[in-house]
Structure formats: C-alpha cells, structure tokens
Amino acid sequence: MSRRTTATCYALLMVLLVASLAVEVSSTNVKNGMGNTNTMSEDERDVKRKLTGEDDTLIYTKTYIAVTKAADFVRLFPNGGDIVSFFDDFITKALAAVEAGGPTFKGNPEFSIQGSSTTQKGAVFDSSSIEVVNAPDGVEVDVGFIKFLQVQFAGNRKIKFTPVDDPFYFFHGQCIVTSGFLEPSKQIDVLAGIERSIPQPVITSKSCRLNLCLGGGGFSCIAIYSGSAFVFNFGKGIALNNSEKPGKGIPKTSEAPPLPPPYPGTIIGGTGAFEGIEGSVTIVTIAGTTGPTVLLDSGADIFSGSKPVGSIVQVISVKSNMALPPGP
Image (cartoon, rainbow, N blue to C red; front, side, top):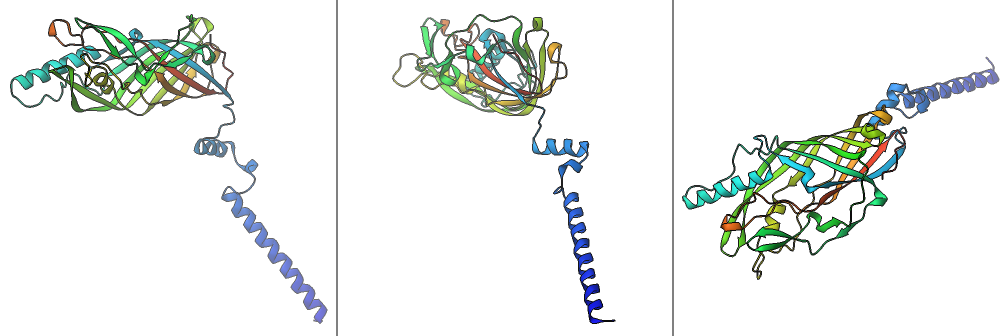
C-alpha cells in the first residue's frame, strides 16, 4: 500500500470518529432535556410547566377588593359557640380557678381551636373604587357605665368610605381550622385593679372554600380552594384592645391588633361566564375590625353583647386563563 493511500484511509477514519462522537453528544443532550424542546411530548411539557411554575395560558390578571362588614364575618367553634362565648367562658372559668386557689385554667376542650370556622360574605369592588386610610386614633365604642372606650382597628387602617355595591358582585365562603393550639393566656387589666385572663388561640393551618362572584345575576362565580399553613393568633388583638394603658383612667389602645397573613388559593372551577376557568389567587387582608370589647356594666366584665366595629378589607389578586370583568 502506498504512503498516499495510507494517509487517505487515516483521514477517513478520523472523520468517521468525529461524526460518531457528535451523534453521541447530541443524543445525550436531548435525553437530559438540553436539546430542542420541540422534541418533547405534550405530557413532558406539562410536567415541566408544573415543576417550574410556568404556564403560558394564565395570561390575564385582575385585582378586586372585598369589603366584609363586621356583622358578616362569623367565627364559630365545634360546639356551636361564637367568639364572644369563647372568651366569656375562658374569663369566667379562669377567674373561678384563681378564686378557688386551684390550678391555672388552661382552656375548655369544648372550645377546640381545631375544627373552628369562619364564614364571611362581602361586597366586591374594583380596586380603583376603594380607598383605605390610616386610622391612628381608632374609634370610640360604648362599653357600658364607662360610656366610651377608644380602641384600634386591626392593622391601624380603615376604609375611607364604602361605595354603593352591586348585589351580583360578592365574595363569600368558609374556612376551617385544620390545626391550632392555645398559647398561655395573657393577663390584662381591664380597669385599675381588675385583672382578667385573655386566651391566646393560635391557628397554624386552615382550608377554605370560597366563591368570587362577578356579575351574571350572581351566577358567574369563580370557585377557589385554599389549604395551607396560616399562622395567626386571633386573641392577641383582643388583649391589646381591652388592656388598660399606664397613666390612663380607662383603657386606651395605642397598639393596633395584627392583621392575618396573606394566603394563596387555587381556582378549581367556575360557573356561568367562567366555566372552564383555571388559575390562582392571592388574598391579602389590608384592614380589619376592632374585634369584641369587654362590657363593664354592673362590674360583670364580659364580652357578651359587644359588637366589633369596622370592616374587613381584602385584596384579591386573580391570575387566570380568561379575561375578567372590572368591578363596580
């Protein structure tokens, strides 16, 4: 074999070797998802969207404001008692335990935190229709023979005014506490020398089924499910708003009760104009009520008969695969 023939064969072998390596690398990259994504199956693309949180179908966003009056937000316990009976039961039994010289009262199992619920129904507005303002002075409420007590709204904010609502735009539903516990109670002076024990119930998670209805005679609604961690002590604000402050003859709150944390939700379906809707929501509470206050008539020092003042204001941000109408 001549020297020229040997060189030609050697060159051909090198070309074949390089081509083989290129094919192998290309095959490996495709297997590792580094190749052209157009070669991925629809199922593989769906999995990738779920893992990365990317979904090019949820292109519409809209923000609404829900305003729920204090009377339209109800908290109930598994035994049927409401928040007022819960606090009165605890205060009465804690005081009796102290007077009897027995062990500290820690809680009534009949008022279980787990399994308690909140139910609400509020009007829905366009975000441009509502204005929330700071309320550092709070509000005066009638508490009996003392006559008036100055307390704070949760979050130290309130709605400036409530526009006329559209009865076909509303937000309602129920949340169930799936886990929670009682922190040690907080001792407060409701008046000089009058000490009371206020329970500190803490929610750690909840599940909610909610409806956001946007017209259609009240039948075009978006169904929302939320089940997540949700850490909130709904007794802290009660203690703050009913505690006497140093140097004051009557209780006067300077620190606002806390607002609950935001929570996410998943759109699980729709009715009317929203059949086939998909997407997600985020619900953020930006203002709240005063909560119940202690009534001091005849020295009873109980919550029964008291009514929270104000409104709960929530921002509902929707991301969906359908265009949504403006609110009223």
